[in-house]
Length: 201
Image (cartoon, rainbow, N blue to C red; front, side, top):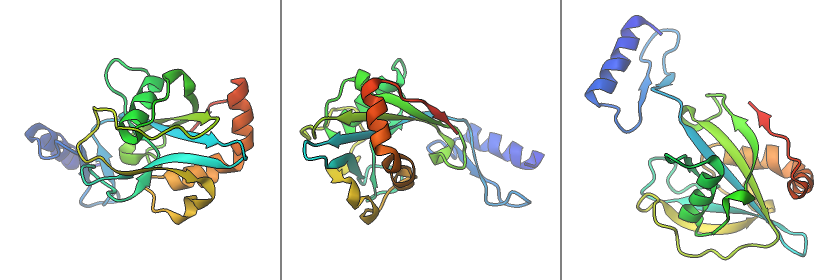
């Protein structure tokens, strides 16, 4: 990045023109069109699965409402930034309650992947992907207070075979189809035995 662009980026932060997004798109040169972020933020992504007695698998998802900053109308797994003073698993428990109305204790979430590649992460975030596997689908209740206004426009337990039929936000469709579903029984076995190995990207 040129010195001029670097100065512009700093100036834009100082005058608050990118107060909400904290980003700057390079207008010219060899890196034209690339987006720079003012920092890397830490987020959690929650893969909440349920295996019913008949062996059928479901994933907990929600539809992004008009109060979300991007990808409105698309579906995603519960996700969001860590709040001050909470652990990653506590953030998972909170996000699932805020976005899906499902109460799951923080100790039920297991870290499975740390995603640091800025080209894969939404807005350059470092994403801590956690897994929770339930023996049956929990009731979807009232959303816990704390989320954004009009953040959620729908919630469901989706049969995993229907994942390709939905319009997804972020990289959640490829995460499910390429990384989670092909290794579902392996994840289930290791989750039950608490022997999950964390991967890093």
